[in-house]
Image (cartoon, rainbow, N blue to C red; front, side, top):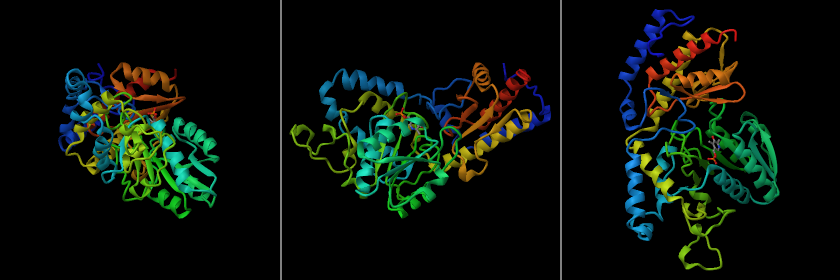
Length: 414
Ligand SMILES: *Cc1c(COP(=O)(O)O)cnc(C)c1O
């Protein structure tokens, strides 16, 4: 329907024509354009991959094999023969290049929330005695704040909520740990991971980064920037599937001192020794807890094939071009004053989503979804559009902006 409706309130037919032509040219020149066919998508525009990534089409057959052959036929033998036992470290090493980490520092398992707990408590222990403050991004995705508050109570620390930009001023000799998000889930703002990490280190504190909205969308450079610990989820830009296990990065230099608050048997040096005394294993496996969620984990492993041969720099270049182009189309099509972008215009401050403040956002998003443009809503008034460079193109961006203008024209004065 929206494809045949080219009327809009402010943009002329020639503007629409010009933007559509530009979109086609940009798509034709896009080095990542071939990735889209790897995904199961319909003819709508999916701009919610920053919440739940799309399904890579080859995954169901691989999961079917996990169920019917690995579990159904090999049963217990699969812990070894199908590589189940070592999956958390193996898949961690698959994620490592996407976030700029050398092998051996990332383990996959549990949810992001649980990994925030492990990371914050372990970081507080690494920071040592005499430092009693944990600084937490005041604008954080709520779970990080809730978990950090509990970790602080358990370890005898005090939580100091602070906006990321104010972190340098808030750091001091009392700071033990700083927990930050690289990209703000609401606004799409990209924070200065290298600069803030350096400031945290200059104050003698430990930096923990949450990469949920950056991994798979932009270069993170964990090793290069000396990040201490990091966590992230795999069901957003990494397309691991609903509730797919998260990951924990512990820089190699901290691994020996990483003292997990959840020292389950999977992190024991000799898990099958079944000894009463705990002795932690070396390496990234020290971040493990209990028996891994194998079906979800191997679903993620299969999904990561979609990244084979992809350079994160190319993803970032396309992401910025897509969000620029979407903002340009919104500007051209949407009547002035109806939406305000809360996503920074500067590339250095932009993640891979565009957040538009809009009156009546809930009904606007509902109508967009009815017309095949799937974004989401952050209450009360933010429309979020996630641009996942592996499967969103420039024609999608143009169409989404055009349909948004149509929806807003229909609800004018409502
Ligand atoms: C998506 C997201 C989470 C999700 O946590 P779960 O434990 O997987 O539910 C946590 N933190 C941030 C910053 C997120 O964006």
